[in-house]
Image (cartoon, rainbow, N blue to C red):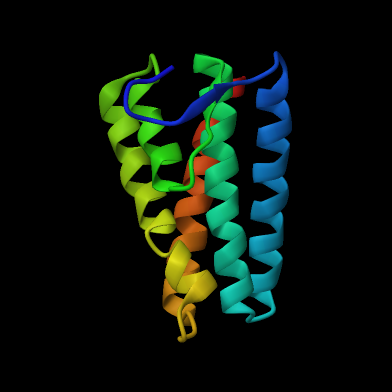
Amino acid sequence: MVKGLATKPVKVGSDRMYFSKAEEFLRGARTLAEMGMWNSSAVLSVHAVISACDAISARFLQLRHSGADHMHAVELLKSLPLDKSEIQAKLRQARRVISLKNTVEYEDRLIQQRDALEMLRDAERVVEWVESKFR
């Protein structure tokens, strides 16, 4: 358990399942961006980041976030036994995406193309980083 964050243990091998979800969400986000479906692309970018965070946490901590605040899934990255400067860069990218989750899913406004593309770019960087740690 990581102090102050709601977590739960994961089964051996679940890191791959979470990473598979992250990749699928990312592919969907790219496809929808190509179609100009900015809100849908943004939602999938959010879920790609959440699943990527779950994947790397499962791999290195044998835990994943289990609370309602998805930003805590990102904060769990601070506990990884990896280079702290590298983690800081990924924290910034993941936070930017997750910070727009409520806007994308619940607010009465549409996501603009620029914002959706920035979210997609950050999601790609986070997912690619997690993939590099699985090699």
